[in-house]
Length: 382
Image 1 (spheres, helix red, strand yellow):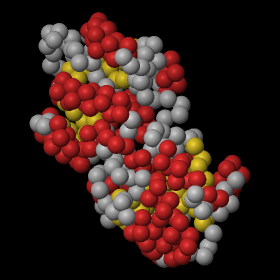
Image 2 (cartoon, helix red, strand yellow):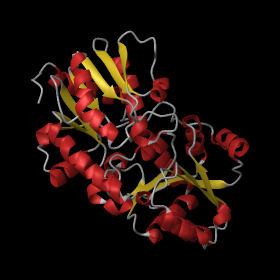
Image 3 (tube, one colour):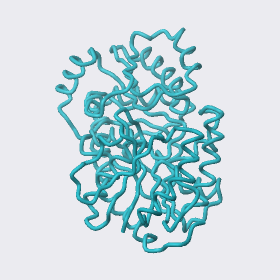
């Protein structure tokens, strides 16, 4: 079987979707010893691939996944011709992007979330309109849809009227990079590399409205009023969009000296931040999966997160869940954990057990089953 996968989201500075694609590809190449793989990429994506792999080929393009509208025209009209020439059996768009025309190949698309439909006010207007258009067509044209959570599957059925039998739920997973480390050693390295000297709460995610950072900052201010010890709040992630309200809020924020925005953190440093933290706090308004929560649990770090979207599905009883619209409730749970080391230890143990249920090897195997279920079928150009 010949399988083509779009890896254009795998960049040196990548976040959720790019990491999903990278780890899926790495494990597919390990688990599948029969198929030939063709990776749709630009030159800047090739660092992620092993050049010597005997069954790996590349389909190079000059267009990134964010090149509109010319990249879209190329993807929908030129790419199908290239795939047909290579006799591709299955094309996988792991970042919701697929060609709308087919030429003898089947199509799998991964849908990560429906933010554009359910929380449109948290993304730019033009981007939201574009994603609603793309998602509507993608779920209709795909032969199979991979949903990264049962919650996203239910959203697809409810919002876009997708037939349930068309959807396969395949969870994401943490990588072996996220594991328990000696806390003192992690904190020492953070002190040397980032100048971080205080005990701290940690949040990881792109800086955008959906991550709900104003509520987190309000909760942190209350924590500082009630806890005498001098804690910091560390926020890691690339600058996103619609950050004006956060910037205005920070102008009069009384604890700016206790807030550290690290910006993008290299992958190898993230486990240091996770392990060095007292608590990982993630009050997101909506997540299709919520991988940072799972990565924190894989490090044995106690988690406080939201009681909505996919988060309860991932965390179950291994973390504390709160209403993300309520800074008072969030502050109370943070204070509770900071004052109760035995509860932090309990959540650490539960988190490690829960995180161990998710592996990229299993995700790759299930994805390969999806490819095989449709890969032997073909049809004329439509």
